[in-house]
Length: 223
Image (tube, rainbow, N blue to C red; front, side, top):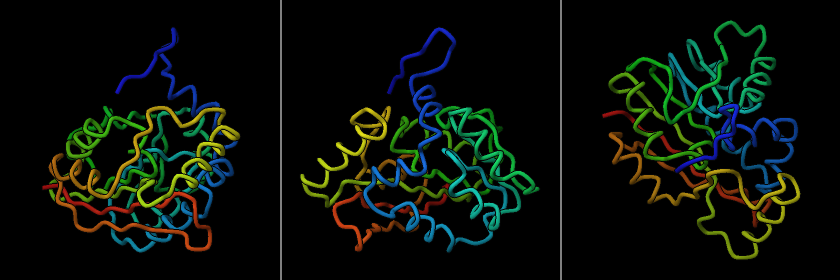
């Protein structure tokens, strides 16, 4: 998967997310058409003892507080510098959290640095094989990988059309840069092929708001 690169070295994805940072929280919930982010957050809050954690796609810091209370330390990262700034401000005064700009497809971290890695609504907008390979490299043996992605699996044509219209209204494009929508099977196969053993995978739905995106929550362990 390739991205256009502007003369300054900023990719089209970085430019898009920098521009979208101010409207992301309300915008993404509107695009999903439901409370899926909060449902995924509730699932994350079930985790315990994550130890040394890295988060990719921290965005505005929606998932970061939950990671902070379940980890010895958290490095929250995003491709967008504007998003990193918002997370850094949100987590100001939380001693076990730092925030920095990183590309999850190729990070600056040493091999075997982390006990846990969390990809929050991120894998569906990056190079999947490259990202999973990088997660395998930076995690310790037996390290845990947590993935949340939206999925259109089980959503009808009307629901998909609604998502497209909401994307156009909020972000002025049909979809975000690099978007790949996974099914449970395609996500399972990607992660297993990347050197992980899938421990569990759940399809989460918002029954109060039918027609919006469903969500997949996956737990995996480095082999």
